[in-house]
Structure formats: C-alpha cells, structure tokens
Amino acid sequence: MRIEFTLNGEARAVEVAGTTPLLWVLRESLELSGTKFGCGRALCGACTVHVDGTAVRACSYPVRYVAGKQVRTIEGLERDAVGRAVVGAWIDLDVVQCGWCQPGQCMAAAALLSADASPDDATIDGAMSGNLCRCGTYPRIRAAIHRAAATLRGEDGR
Ligand code: FES
Ligand code: FES
Image 1 (cartoon, rainbow, N blue to C red):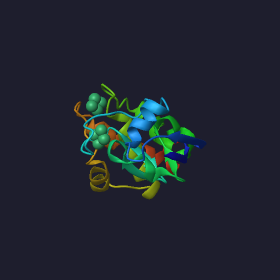
Image 2 (cartoon, protein in one colour; image 1 turned 60 degrees about the vertical axis):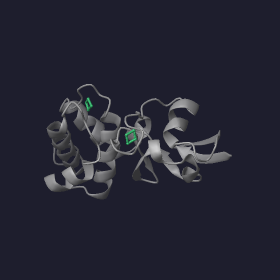
Image 3 (cartoon, rainbow, N blue to C red; image 1 turned 180 degrees about the horizontal axis):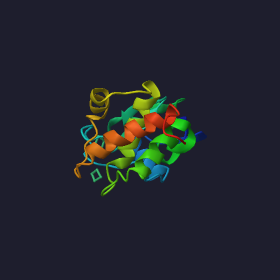
Image 4 (cartoon, rainbow, N blue to C red; image 1 turned 90 degrees about the vertical axis):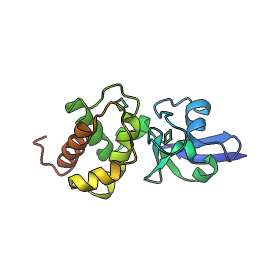
C-alpha cells in the first residue's frame, strides 16, 4: 500500500506492506539509519521516534499508522528548540558512551521535555525507564535532561 506522511518536515511516500514496522521503512526504504534496532520487541527503546509528538517504538509500530501524520527521527531532532536543547545538553555533559541507545534516549527526552519543562528526578526516571542503556549512562542522561530543561527555561546563562 502507498503511505504518505511527513518525515522531519518533508512530505514522503512509501510503497510497502502496511504491517511493515516503521523502523524498517526508516532505515531500509528511506535510508535514515540514525534510529537504531535493539531488541525488535518494544523492550529497549533504541528505536524511539516521535509520531505527532508522541514517543513510539518504531520496531513495533506498523507503518500504516503514520499515514497523514508527522514523524520525527533523530535526524530531525534539532528542528525545534527542545531538540536543540537536548542535543546541546548531551554534548555539554558528554553523555554518550558506545552510542547505540542514544538516539532513542534523546527522542524520549525530547518528548518528555515537550510535555514537562521542569521534570523532577522521579518524573525523568519514570519517563526514561523504557529506554535501556547497556553502558549505564543513566546518571548523565538524567543530568542532561535537567540541563536541557534549564536551557529551555533560560536559566543556564546562554
Ligand atoms: S528495538 Fe524497538 S524497543 Fe528495542
Ligand atoms: S551508550 Fe552504550 S548502550 Fe547506551
């Protein structure tokens, strides 16, 4: 079936089976390899992208569900202030270790900050609990989300 949607601000169309996971379409059909494959079973969060602003697991999200919707991937994260704040904080605090989980972490963080500009530790831990990091960067992820939130509130002196 033909599926039309907006991807990182650009109109796109693909001709695939509607049950194909969105992750496959992003990585194979559209050659956007920033979104990662981890478990393939909606358990690790490595494949997190946004559909109409909501974080979803692309490995388990049938592509037919994005018809007519806005999809954002890590490649488009810096298109808005929240995404730029997240990426800036990740760089400032040197969050990344091996990096595999980090696109998904950043997308989950951006979804959180879009909904809550001042999340406390418990809120951050709850929102990020589905995004696993085998390198154990959780303390830096939490600190970076606080940093990004401060940036968005204009409280980090930038
Ligand atoms: S690859 Fe999608 S949740 Fe793990
Ligand atoms: S940075 Fe290596 S898995 Fe998270």
